[in-house]
Length: 126
Image 1 (spheres, rainbow, N blue to C red):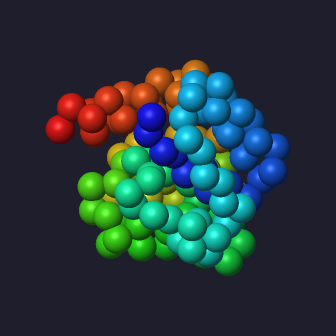
Image 2 (image 1 turned 135 degrees about the vertical axis):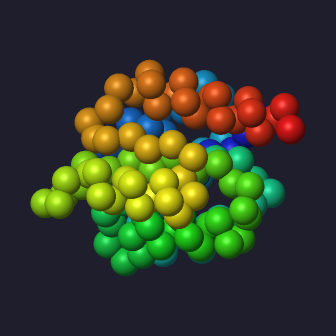
C-alpha cells in the first residue's frame, strides 16, 4: 500500500487526516511542520504528500520546493486556509511550485480522499 505523508501543524486537522487515511489502509507518516517533514521524508516510502502551507519553521511552499528537488515525480496536495491574505495566493504559488492539486480549507474530506486516490492510481499505472 502507498505511503502518505501528512504535514500539518493543526493537531485536530492532522489527526482527522491521519485517521481517514489509516482507515483506508495507507501507511501514514505525520509531521507537525515543514522542518520535521523534510527530516522524515524518505522517497522510497512516500508516494504522496499532503501539506499545509502556513506553518511554523519551514512553510509548505519551501517544503514543496525541497521535496520536488529530492523527488521530482512526487505527488503533492497543498491545503491552506490562507491566513490573513486568503488562500488563493498561497495555493496558486503552491501549484506553480509543483503541487499536483490544491484544496482551500475548509474542504470536503471525501473530495480530498478521492483526489489522493486518483493521484496514487495514476502513479501506479506509470
